[in-house]
Amino acid sequence: MSEIQIVPLARAAPIALANGSWTKMLVTREYVAGNDTALGFSLFTAGTVTELVAHEVEELVFVVEGHGELRRDVGAPVPFSSGDAIFVPRRAWHAVANLSEGDVTMVCVFPHPTYPPTERRSAIV
Image 1 (cartoon, helix red, strand yellow):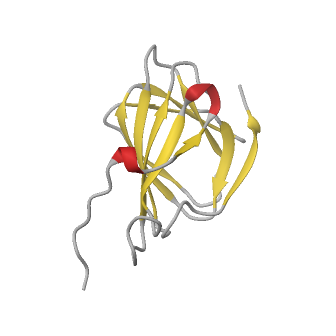
Image 2 (cartoon, rainbow, N blue to C red):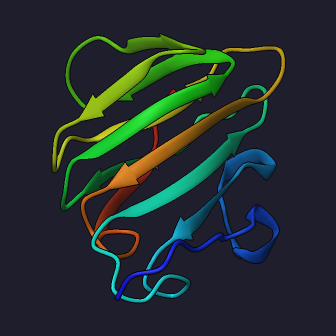
């Protein structure tokens, strides 16, 4: 039988990103036994551009605060701002660029029980 569970943000260990930014994976099998979907929260400090990543599965993102763009390995950047929902197809190379004067915060969801297998490349500017 499943039970409703709470995972406080403070409980999850941060995954360090560029420029003091971080991601915390909150709903994963590490914290919620038997889950099939992972949920994370990310904070990107002003001026941050992350490395390019491509996840094995699709990613759903909700932009809570700030604005910026998703930079891709091919094609024009995709602008985003607070209140936007973003669909990133599986294996699509993308990097987050924070164009705000403050933080960009996002909630991300993966159809995978943990942070999914991910390839990484150097950051793009």
